[in-house]
Image 1: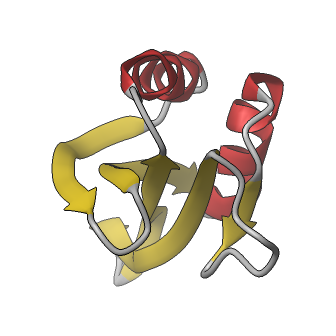
Image 2: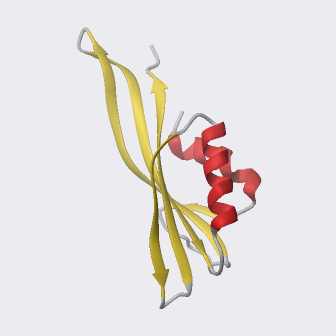
Length: 113
């Protein structure tokens, strides 16, 4: 049970190269970088957390239009019960020629006993 694993599963059918943290290989025209952001415990009872919330940022980089891929990412994540906490156009990177778009997500996991 990890948000990174679940993101990989949700997005693998899109056939967009995906890496965690940083893209290590030569960057293709479209790719995704996933960065874990936070883990928190919620729903406490008797001083014991009942839910683990894991959050991550999904960054889409694309040379040219990114709209189709952005929408496909959002649909895939919603289909796998992610909570989308933010969607934001970051900007055009003149040095690289990539448009940059972020989707922030959270996923709730029940605590194992």
